[in-house]
Image (cartoon, rainbow, N blue to C red; front, side, top):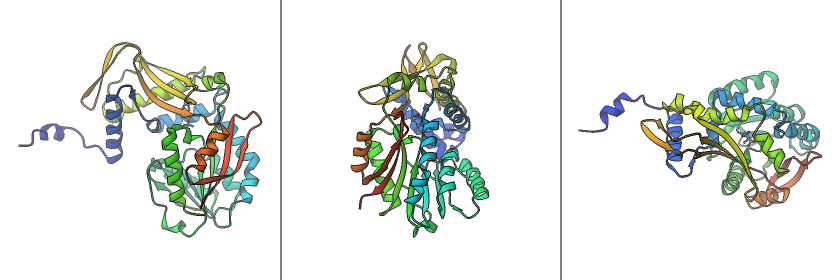
Length: 323
Ligand code: AVJ
C-alpha cells in the first residue's frame, strides 16, 4: 500500500507553474537565512503594485529610463537593420517597447514572459496599434533557456531587457543570463539593456522605502500570494518591510522581518521565525558603467553605445554580440 496516497488524494493537484512556485517557496523558507525569489512578486496584484511604484516620486528608475529611451530612440533606430525581430525578455507594461516600436521599423516583436494571460492581452493591444508588426508571444521563464519562434529564425535579432531587471540577478546569474541571451539571439545580434547605477545611498534608500508605503505592500504581497496559491497562513501584519543598501555588494536588499516569534504553515509544512528574523525577498544590484561593461564583455557582448541621464542615475546600453 502507498502510505502517501490518502494525503495526495485530498490535496488539489497543483499545475506545473504552481508546483515550481511551491518547490521554490518550501526550499527558500527551509534555508537559513530564509529567502524567496523576487520573480514571485509579479502576480496580478504584485504587477499592479509595481506599476504604482514606477509612479512614486522616490522611484527614479522608470521615469529616468523612459527619458533616455525617448531621447535616444533616433540613435537606436539608426542601428537597427531592416526587417529585425525585437525580442523582449520579460514583458511588463508596454510603455517602454512602444517607444522603440514607434521610432524603429521592426518587422516582428517577440515578448517573452512567464505570465501567459498577461502576454496575450499585451500582444492583442500591440497588434491593434501596430498592424504591420508580427507579434509572436512566447510563454516562458526567460531566466531559463527557451526557443525563439521559427517565424523569426531568418530575421536579424535585437534583444530588449529594460528596467534594470538584470539587477535582480546575482552577479554570476547576470553573466549566465547575458551568455544565454547571446545564445538565444544568435550571432550578429544586438541588445538594448537598461541598467540602474550606483549613486548616493540616501536616494537609493528612499526609492525602496517610499513614504506612501507602496514598496512595503509590494514586498508583503508575496505572502498574500503564498497564502492564496499555496494555502499558506502568513499574517502579513506580523511582518515588516525593510530595505537596506549593502555598499560592499552594490545592492539594495529587501527583507520581510518577523515582528515576533511565530510559526507559519505552507502546504502542510511549518516554518518557525524568531523575533526579528528575516526573509530576504530581493536583491537589486546597482552597477557602475565600468562594472557593467566588464560584465557584458565577459559574457559574449561588446558595448556599442552607453547613455545616461544628466544626473547619471540610470544607463541604457546597446550591445553587439562579440562573434
Ligand atoms: C523591477 C527589479 C527593476 O529592483 O528596482 C522595485 C523591482 N523592487 N521596488 C527594482 C522593485 C522594489 C525593481 N526591478
